[in-house]
Length: 126
Image (cartoon, rainbow, N blue to C red; front, side, top):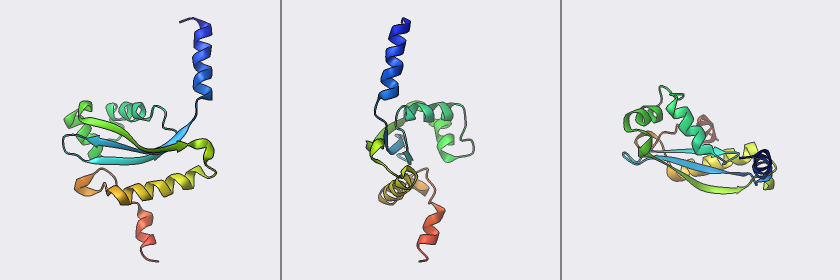
């Protein structure tokens, strides 16, 4: 690949639309799921694979199952996405999306790898 081709690829990457959204990682052996919201969906699966392969999430059930069942037992799915250019407050938008999808799919305890957000305990007291 010559320098001109590399420059074209860099420019295409730089100006490609950025999508935010909700992702799911599923263990196809035990059907547990992990739900996350991300500000940039581009190559997010690679990010998780790299960290799980390097035992970055040590001490977590997701990491334990990744080591036990292997990478081939896991799938990655984008559950919902939108253009990041349309968002004014990304942090609040992601928090709202996370709450919505966690309540919808309840990936806690035997069903998944997520923890219930602590803010939910305070929300229920109002």
